[in-house]
Length: 233
Picture 1 (cartoon, rainbow, N blue to C red):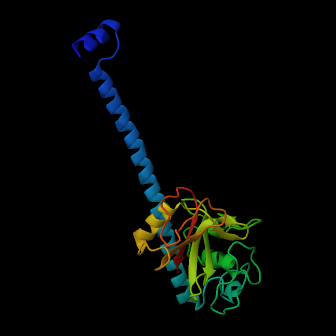
Picture 2 (spheres, rainbow, N blue to C red):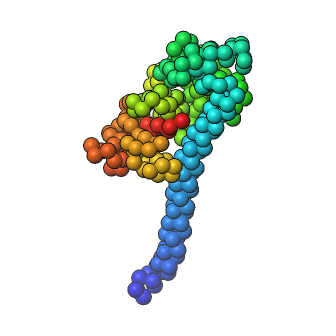
């Protein structure tokens, strides 16, 4: 050790202590960057739950005020704004989610009704429609990517669910989340069981690998985007 130290001094190289300190500093910087990325990821995931709660609250207020579901409200053009598409008031928000507003496309009108009624903080995104319906233009986008659509009875339960996914044509069921991301959201606000409760996971269209195992658990061995998440209204 003495010979190595003397050699380092004679050659003007860094000492072992100096190298150790430099490596320690590098390790701290790398650790800080990774921790920062984890915090940003956690914040983006939590923002998803905040958005879903905003949608639920806005829907409840709308129903109290107008006596009908947004999108399904049959007097929206009279009671809210003349440019709105009226629904058929059958208690079901119909349509694939991202189809252009029109007969049977109440799932798109859902966001316009809420926005025009002044009940969505994301009104500028969800209520402004120009051309094709996309996330951020006719339907709200999520900070984690992709966005939200609404579906009726995807599990045969006769209930409405918010769907978080990527755009897939006129639907929002494209793979968006990794199994780990989906599980984190599920555990934060529900049971963590992807097939039960108020938050449920499913295979997203165009995903890489599987979101769920054959046993119905999150497939945490898959690090790629494979999942979509449903949140009960």
